Amino acid sequence: MAASPPLSSAELLARAERLAGESIARIASALALPVPPDLKRHKGWVGHLVERALGASAGSLPVPDFQTLGIELKTLPVDAHGYPYESTFVCTITIAELLGDEWSQSRVCHKLTRVLWMPLDGDRQRALSERRFGSPFLWSPTPEQMEALKFDWEELTGRVARYGVDAISGHIGQHLQIRPKAKNAAARRRGLDEDGGSAENMPRGFYLRPSFTGSILRSHFGLPERS
DNA sequence: CCGTGATCATTC
DNA sequence: GAATGATCACGG
Image (tube, rainbow, N blue to C red; front, side, top):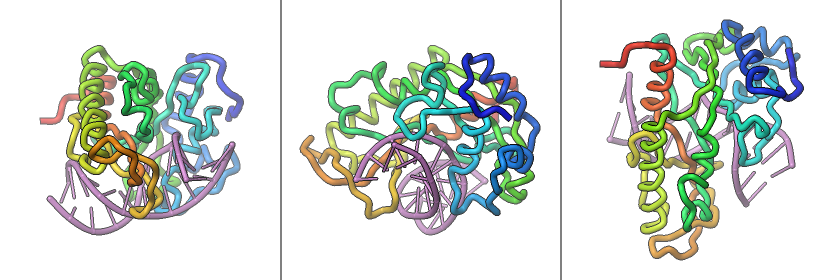
């Protein structure tokens, strides 16, 4: 089980493919890591496990996991039909991102330019240690997907810039949404108010809706669209 | 304190 | 059941 940074996208993908079909227990064992009973108090545990198994290095820096390769790593818990159980966190929302920055310069765009998806059995009825990984694959947005993401991003950031972050909810955006991303509901950070002024509000983040990541999976694996 | 790794839990 | 809002852990 490798832990040094992969030197090429091919090497990274080859490593990832070796995890396909493997259980959480086996991968954790190879890294001498204990498996928590569930994810209630270890929500990012699987993500960290895969990072270690593949040799990711960016830590918590706001850059792609494999910076030199320009590749972002995302685990994706799915059900028996290959449909994602959860939304996918992309990055936090910052003031700088709302003031004059363009989509092409945004962290959302940068992070989603190239993603290594690691599908995983997300069935909570099954013991975490017994859940297995599916086949990973490298993905970049199609021109249509990129346009759709840009559209949502511009609508979301535009609303925040004009009306303040408290004026938006998780309902906005067809593929991309903004939701809380904080220690708790009392957490506050420097943000914008409805007048474009400075204010303290709850930290938020950009998330991809399950319908979007689900379409990526179905497209890649040639699965039928949900009726 | 902030950003990353996400899933949990309540509401719709 | 699906979706939104809330939350947990960790590194720097």
